[in-house]
Length: 391
Image (tube, rainbow, N blue to C red; front, side, top):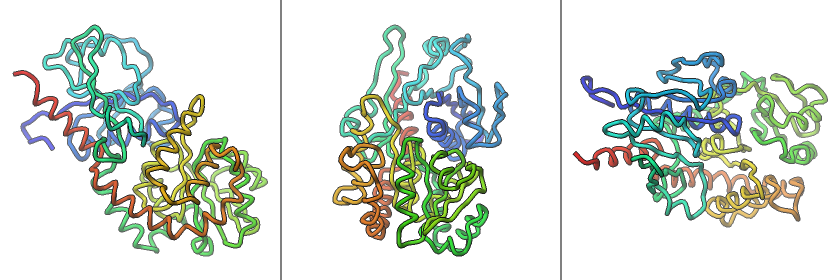
């Protein structure tokens, strides 16, 4: 935190929402942590305030400028606009190589000293990341240098985003069954359902959800599946035989499906903590599932020419080595196993392995803790760049 008589560092974070909630989810977590834990004056530029409002109800989608949780939120409406050096933050972050306004970059070059400029990249487990993390890139025309900053799973990367109090909050919640039951009861989960295998489901529309539901409802173990509003709508409505509105539920065979309202980020964390297995997607919920210390299956964001399958296999190579049931179901879930397109035959072996996967998830969480948290690692690197400037 800055001293009382010391001006706070300023930081501008630019976010374009591509994956409906993942991009803004990551940037909102980062902005809040920078403000709350490090006392930095943050301006978050976002092009899609509607998606932002889904994970942060306080957001006004019509406001050009608003302050939420101590963070200044600006609607990034276009690439136009004139900026002066006085408008430029000490640290500028573009998330996932988004193109920030040309006028802002021009004003950055006029600053003295010039701001620290980062491209905060997407998360991948591929080995090349370690060689590219913190590499500089000179602007082709202006006296500016941008550095690449990669989140990751090793000490040679920026680590994963994690608030300072997150692990203690998780532990206290998971060690208190009454608190977990009270939390889930808000969504209609009954005492009987609390005793079942609880699964949260967050995936893209093309996931083979209907096939998995078929395996679950015809199995020998009671399963309660909790699905946020809007997720896998076709498969959920087919199972419910009714609209998939928040509060809707149905039990068929050994499967109960409940539709949850879309919750704010802190409650989504609690949902992950309260479940025995989490299906997650994209990057933000993927990272939060790892901090939950629970088994999870990742639905990776699809890319052209199936490039995402390479990234998936790279992660599974780090995370699921020797865990064949997890690797098999994960590849199938992502359409990366042409010989096994249906997850139903894979489910019994996966379910039998859940105790082992639970222990493994907790061990992995400890490994990730050792890498530090991304926000602190980024600020430490920014400080080293600022201190190495001439004069």
